[in-house]
Image (cartoon, rainbow, N blue to C red; front, side, top):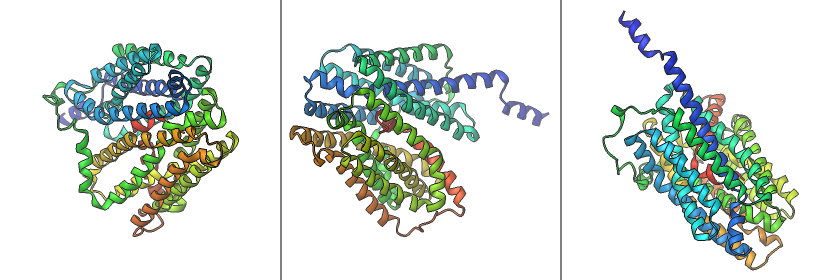
Length: 453
């Protein structure tokens, strides 16, 4: 009798299963719509800033650097704040208020005619977009442990779909009018809020919430302090920081660079970003398992960093858009290096510390997002002010290549004690683990928001 009761308690009721399924569908849709909203404006926001500055591409680059730094700073400081709020008030109000705030923010950005107001809108979007971690927490609340990998994979699918479709749509609409992508983002976000208001249940029971707002957990610097506890992985953390810095060349300069060098408008940029998303899906979804099976974890890391270095140099040298596209498959293979580095790190840290370590690495990526925009946009502004149109025009990509090349040298040194083949007994097991890490990497909001170039 007791066993029957316990089994009955453990088994979800049909009604409970239906509610959980509805919640999972909503979280998938809300993440997809958020990604679509951000992806829509990627091809047009730099041009909108440029239009406020009389078409001055150099000043537009510097201002876009301010916009990017402000966005990532808001992400860095408000992601833990929203997480602490959701632990205190519940997940539902934080997610819904974020959706509503994002919709109203895009409305502001669609209407304003001055650069300071547009900048304020970008700051607000950085704050409201910090809810991705709350969506992850919601999934963990409503999903059994044995099914969480599948659930997080579903969110990774939402990111992938959004980044393939949205830039192409945003670029197409931007050719008609630079404000149209913002208006579509408004409709999507407010529809998402209305849908969630009637569908989304609360996932965190009152008895499991924190009794008050926890300022200690809301401190964004706390996770960075944890890194000093892991001296054995600091070298790899440095590698990942350099990769995060280099990756920022895409969201900070690509749109203006493509216009300046190839005379691409928003539509061509949107199609190019969609192609980037497809290549990333091919690499992350299938090739990474084969590459780690051939080369092992350390070999995959070195191979990925090498492709990244070569890819950035080819981008900088590309004299035409056709040459740029030809370099994209090489650069896309860089995507295997981050999951490989994370997989190597997981072998050197206690399993009970993995979550906090990953949080610290994510915070470090946010720090890179605050530093890199100023570096790349000011370098690009110097190039345009000097009116370079020869090989020097690719200076930002050459700098990114130098960063990844330095990461290659550092990785070679700090992993020299590891075998070239996988550090796990079975290559298939290692490949599966790195593929799981790759799926989780796609869930990091700061990279997801800005780029997939």
